[in-house]
Length: 170
Image (cartoon, rainbow, N blue to C red; front, side, top):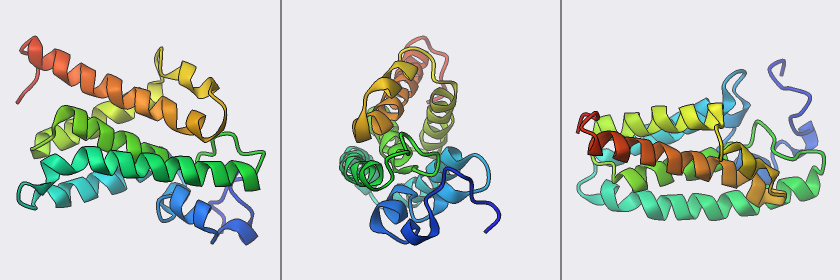
């Protein structure tokens, strides 16, 4: 497996539940742009949910809550079993929680809102402007998660501000 990196879990841990869950069914092991690939998996799920009648709009916040809880649990197990991993790049469950939070805060109900949420969240997660970067200092699995949740809030705020200023397409 040539695309694995030195910071990835050892082979004997690869099929453990924290790695399988934390990598969002191994999408976090993409050779490049791991966080974006993991979030893209959620984008596809969101697009599928969009086509279900009335369920998608009310689903975002419960999905964000479930993925947040799973991220905290899996993150704690990863840190406990692989102590050198502070915030491993392959761990993308936190991106899933944050992306669904973005959609919930946006009350995403269209293809445009789902894609805009994806692009804006990824921008803030990659750029990590203040205060997003400061959340990385929080220890443990909460620190793995909080910078992504902060990026989600900034992404939603950006679209709400753009809409209020008449700059966003509804």
